[in-house]
Image (cartoon, rainbow over all chains, first blue to last red; front, side, top):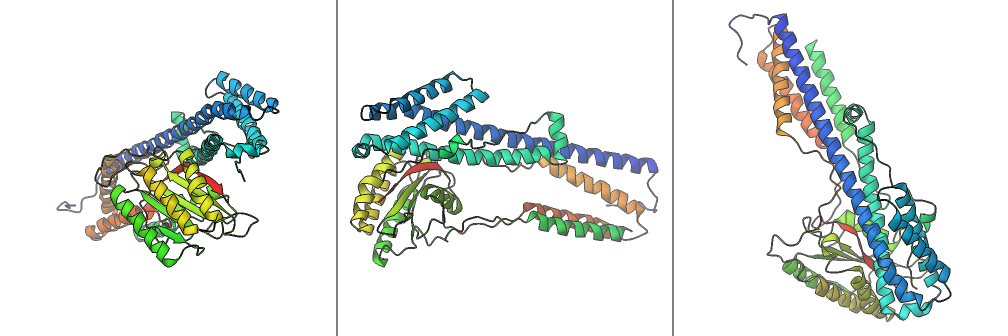
Length: 198
Length: 265
């Protein structure tokens, strides 16, 4: 910094002006950084949500194949199959993103798990490679769902912390970012399908 | 008074730098990998392991796919899938841009002596899910591993399984092609991209502070004030980079989405 020839102090006006400019720059940088962080976290949450729903759909689509291949061998278990079919229609009928859809998916999950448990009473199913492959796919889908849920909760955790902490909560309030609900296991879903065939 | 201000800001920055260095504590401790063949239970002989390692490394050289074998004595209270998923994430198997890793995990079955009885999980990275759907993985376990393990031919079973995995995943990626079908981008990144305007703004800020500070000085060297300010700027930068414990691993940084299948004997 070049100094003037004499040690002449800045006028009060100029100092105040510089200080105000400095404060304005700080505010703009802060708002910019905070808003962009929130946008990034929010988009991550939406992606994680979509990933979960992809897996739910996959599970949903696999069920008819499983039912077709085992129904003939399990003629005593009509109630189980009926419950599963009802749960599937409720899921199809519910509007995407609504609480009904979530409740319906929980219904599908618990009736599917009941079917898988009942299947363990039929050892002859183990000799059918077709049934085994379907079980691999269903178990694989359950595993992917659990990974997707953990990822989703982690992402939502980061988003919510940002929305709630000071001072980013100020920016969140101004631009309307809302907290998201974590995925919580329902009591019925505690018995998620555990497929162990021996 | 300015010396006090400088002292205070230095202390604040020092405290902040400790606050931001975080230690990631895992509930489960995972072993350190010894390479692509990790036999912590002594199921395979030295020569069997060496030959398998050569096979796997050749495969990686041709295809960039990373296959890793892990045999443990203890799943530490987790079920085989969960243990495999966490281990996969800890070691980061597969190339970072392709997620083309496969983890073959073998361990004890609860309530039984290992290795008379045990559990298997093959965890497939995101980039190989197409080549190895769960039904194929399950068939490999049922047909290549379980019968051999029941006959106590552990190395033979493992070699069969690895060959089957290589057969299924060959051709998905090649070492030469840089634009191979990649895995879906992860949603997990939470870092904000740095904006060049931010640096310009911070630079302008420090110029302003320097101007104001030098006008208040009592004939102290202007150089002293200037360098004091820039000194604290560089400390801020390094403190906020943050430190986290890096897992020990020789692998490419890839991810798994939970695909794969399990079985037991």
